[in-house]
Image (cartoon, rainbow over all chains, first blue to last red; front, side):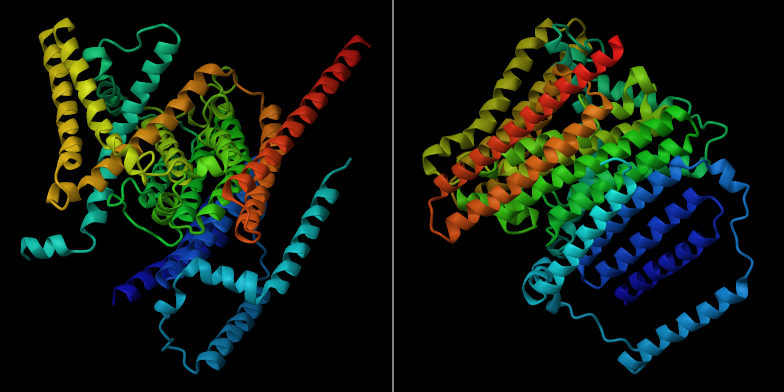
Length: 168
Length: 443
C-alpha cells in the first residue's frame, strides 16, 4: 500500500514537472522543473530498491548535467529570449509523433508483460548488495562492451575539446 | 501502544537522530562561527567577542535573534519564488547529506549500501541553491558570484572525487559505517595509507565550501558578498547555516574516510586503553577552568552563566567517565561505544574545522585563474596518480604478496614525486608568463 502511494506520488510529480518543463516560458523555471522531474525519477528508482541507480541519477543528471545547463542558461541574456517566439505552431507534426511514440511504448509493455495493469513486483532481495551487483555486471560480465563504450566516450570528449578550442 | 512497543520500533533511533540534527545544527553552526571569530582574534592578538555573555559565549544567540528580527527584503525585480526557494534548497541539501554520517556506532540515521555516494550526491545539490539564488536576485554581483561558485564547485568536485575513490579502494565498500569498521579491522586509519589523497581532499574540500583562500564567490573587494548580496535577515542566515553545515559535512567525510571516524586513536591496542579516560579528563579540565574564571566575571549574570557552562562540562565529563570506569557487561559499559564514539568523532571534525580556520587566517585569497589552474592542472592529476598508486599498492600487497609498508611507501613516494614535478612545471610556466608580460609592457 505504502509502496503504491510513494510510486504514484513520484510518478505524478515526474509527469507534471515534465509537462511544465516544456510549457514554461522562462528557461530557468523550465530548468528547475527538469530538476524536479529528474529527482522524482530518482525517487521511483529508490522505491524500487535500486539504490545505486537512484544516487547515480542524482549525481549525474541533477548534480552534473543540469548544473551545466543552468550555468549556460544564466550566461544567456534572458530578456531577449523572452520576447522571441519560442513556440512552433505546427502542432499536428507533434501530435503524430506523440501518437507514434505512445503506441510504441504500449506495444513494448504489452509484448514484454502481457498485461497493462499487473506489473511484476520489484525483486527485493535480488538487488542486494546493490553497488556490488552493478560493479559485477559492468566490470565482469560485460567488461568488453563497457570498455568499448568508455573509449568511445573518451574519443567524443577529446573531439569536443578539439572542436571548441581555436588554438591548441 | 505501550512504552515497550515504542522502544522496539525500528525507526525510533533514526527519528531521534534526525530530530537532534535538525534542532541542534543551527546552534552548532552559530557556535562554530563564535569559535571561528575567537580563533581569528587569537591569531591576530585580539580578544574577539567579549560583551554578550562571559567571553562572548552568548554572542551566537544574540546574532540569531538579530537576524530573525531583521527586515526581510526582496528586490523589486527579483524572481520572487526562486528567491524564496534558493536558500531552502541549500539548507535542505546540506542537512540531508548529514543523514548517512556515522557520528557513532549508534548515532547514525541510515546505514545505506551507497552511504558515501549519497553524501556526495545530495551535498552537491546545494549548488542549485547558490546558482538559483544568484540568478533570482537579478543583480550583476550576485550572478557573477554564483557563476564563480558553480565553476569552482564543479572543478573541485572532480579532485575531491578522485581522493574519495582512493580511500574507497582501501575500504572496499561505500557504506559509511563499514568504512570505519574496516579501519578498525586493519588497525590503521586510511590517512596513513593515502596521505596524498587526504591532502588532495583537504584542499578540494576547502574550495568546495567556498572558504578562504578560495572564497572567490564572495570576495568582498570585488563582488560585495557574492551570490548572497541581495539577501538579508533570515534568508541570509539560511545561506550561512547551509555554508557551515557543508563545512561539517566535508569534515565528516574526511573524518570517516581518512581519520577513522568514531574510532579512538589506537582502537585495537589494549596498551593504549588509558586513552578511554582522556575525553572525561579533557572536559574536566575545561570545567575546572570555567569555575576558575567565575569570580573574574564583571556582572552577576555572567558569573552565573559561567558556572552553568562549567557544570555542563562537568556533567559531560561524568557522562563520559562513568561508562569507561563501569565494569564490563553492565548497562553503563554498554553505552560506552556510542558515547565515546560520538566524542571522538566530534573531536576529529572539530580538529579538521580548526585547520580550515587556520588556513583561512594564514593565506591570502587566490586569483580566479590561479584557482582554476590549481584545480585542473595540479589537484586533478595528483588525485589521479594517487588513485593509481593506491591501486598498484593494493595489487602489490594482495597479488604479489609484498608487505603493506613497502608497497604503500613505494607508491606514496612516487605520487609525491609526481606532485613535486607538477609544482616545478607550474612555477616554470608562471615565471615565463611574467617574463612575457614584462617584455610586452616594456615594448
